Image 1: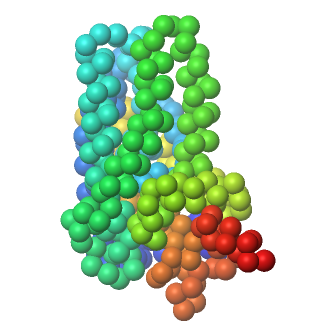
Image 2 (image 1 turned 90 degrees about the vertical axis):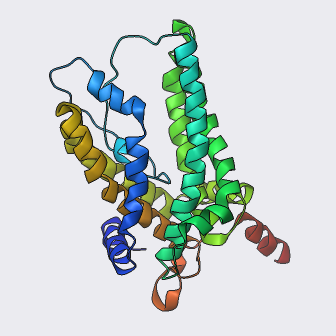
Length: 289
């Protein structure tokens, strides 16, 4: 399989060749709509802030994926405002699911030389991505509720962080599998878990992605967190194409790994050492043997 650096270079070439840089508007828009993170930066009381960020591949790598934001204040308010925030967050996750359908669906077609058709991708994939949005909500909601609960329960946030990282690793391929193979959410989730438990190229890619995000996060945090509104604007605009390149690299990687049409090495075939069939195909092969 190609190195992570080679994948990033290939993604830049594909985006330029097929005129897909405009898709950077999606991570830019999601970053600009993340009012909580913007308030954390603009409302924090500090003279200087530094930090790092890391994570597994996600469907849309926006600016806040690279920035360690300070949390202003020392506690969490419990009341109508906080509860309304949770509701708005849930609505935002669902709307994000629809946007993901157009983003990943259009990119999947575009990097293979087909018309991206953002709107058509939304119509085709909106239902499984709404389901995936609910999966994301199920992962994000527990820590939000723990933070709103009694102080004695907030220690569980550390435990949930571990669960969140493991869950993110197990499922990171799922949204890409939906658009690459036109499969439903259930099969995509099961396939992703199968790839994750196999380790190998899937694990190495996730580790390389985490390292790259960490390295970018050092200067990104220094700029965004310490230059007030100017830093926020620089981060939102400047990091959008960076996120697009990473998302495209993940899309192509999953396409190679699972032998999706239009991806891979010579003659359009994937690198055979990295291929992994869907779980039901494995079971069929075992039965026939």
